[in-house]
Length: 409
Ligand SMILES: CC(C)(COP(=O)(O)OP(=O)(O)OC[C@H]1O[C@@H](n2cnc3c(N)ncnc32)[C@H](O)[C@@H]1OP(=O)(O)O)[C@@H](O)C(=O)NCCC(=O)NCCS
Image (cartoon, rainbow, N blue to C red; front, side, top):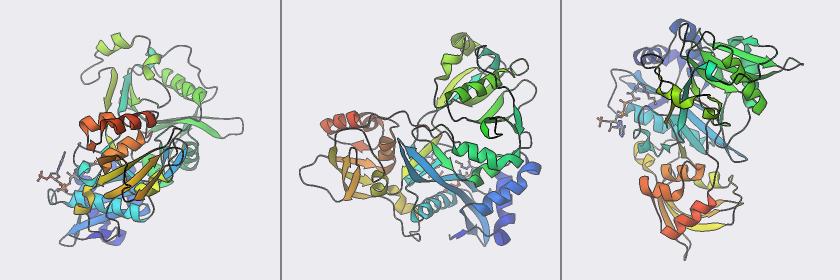
């Protein structure tokens, strides 16, 4: 099986068929042109059977924020295999090769959305933080939320300003920022998407939301809320509240900067309420995004922690090398390192005599670095082994804020 770069002349028809078979385009008429651009404008790989593309992956470069640092990032935004090519390793191969290609082009961390836990763990990915999906009645939000003076409508023709607003978002630890090509597609997948925003006196788009309505009463699904500060976030929630005379339910990922339950007037009673079949009000947590470090010295060279230094030996296992061709010259992160965590973090090849040693899978170490869970917790449930004293010291050092990707890649 050979992986190739996507070439529209050769692969458009077969790749379009793959997407038809997996039903990934919610609105074919509206989204097909965006889909074609999405294949062409991003690193897209295909794998052929008998000269016909049966598997494909699309990846979008960007950055991921670790505390105050921006780190080159690759989101593998889609992995799809045609119905005639399943269970032959195509999906695994195109994901592994997309990851390797990103690493060879300087991305230091990669992330992706999962269909199930385990599949991408085989390529060294580890679970990200919980995504908290809030389903709520807009009219249950407080009456005193501010409502914007003026609301403007946004559509795919506003891509430039929508993207520029997204680039200015209020930051949070773990936030992923992807390139414009990602939003070009997001704005066009569905004709029914509705964008609403607010401008300042100079006409600059300052905050907006993008959502997909469902019928008259909802649940409407908010794809994202984009704001530069807390007051703008509250104004967007006020805007959502204003829909509550008509819309019974909205769904969205909890904004990273608030605990959404604080805003619900009767969260317990609402949780017990059924608004209709499959429409339960409440907050559901699941981790459907994973990440992995691609270059350990590169990532730690860009990491700074406000703590006393801790040095230790680290032996990393990385299963990816067995599942990729190696043609991009990247074979994963497996090996022995001496790691220093502190204001200037570092990873040097080789162990240092006298230091305690941690053994970890690269996915588990990524979770530790990102702050998904403390090292001592990962030692219970993931691939982390270390002496208790070292785990305790690392627990003290890695007191990171809850990471949030804040991007549905
Ligand atoms: C998901 C998808 C890409 C898989 O493609 P595929 O080429 O059939 O998968 P592969 O042959 O590479 O891998 C299958 C193997 O992975 C392993 N695997 C699958 N799920 C796994 C899991 N949850 N945990 C561990 N291993 C798993 C198994 O070994 C499996 O083979 P087996 O069932 O014969 O033992 C394909 O089903 C698809 O396109 N689905 C629709 C779109 C989609 O959901 N894409 C993924 C988005 S995140």
